[in-house]
Image 1 (cartoon, one colour):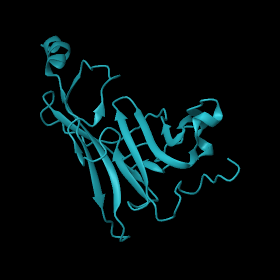
Image 2 (cartoon, rainbow, N blue to C red):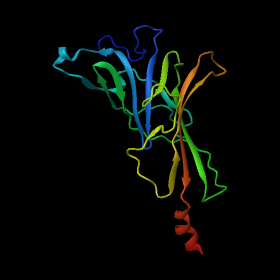
Image 3 (tube, one colour):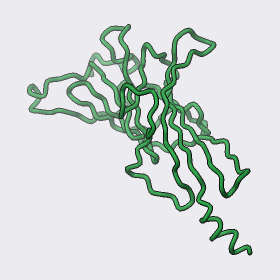
Length: 204
């Protein structure tokens, strides 16, 4: 770490791109992963050590933000350790609770369907400096199942209809460069039986 600068993108040449892979669980951000050439070593030279844990505030991290947040805090600010492998792969699993806003339409309540999205992107770097990709599929721009449901606890009130994810390439009015974002969509349907049994029938 003697010559390491966490404020500089981890590339050999300034023109190189850093590929950041993002995965999402329904209860948290699952993993953020990228390559840092400064942390490449040969395990044979260090008693077979293949990975280390390091405080995340000591290394370069992509400035991922939730664009449509509803909590006033755009960035991932929780301090947690990152796992660094001998091939330079950095895996960061920040424990965060994100609050986003959704336009709720209750015209057909309790038979309504709601659409909520989480839009993640880097605030500083354009696509030629930081390339955002899905953690589970490097090539796709659309995933039918973009969320990991392994730790999801089913709700008695809502049923999940679909969980797509979309990779966008956008040119904003301010800049000529292309900016990338990963948008995760959660489409849920209210279970009407829950309200019929617990609300309508008791009222009748």
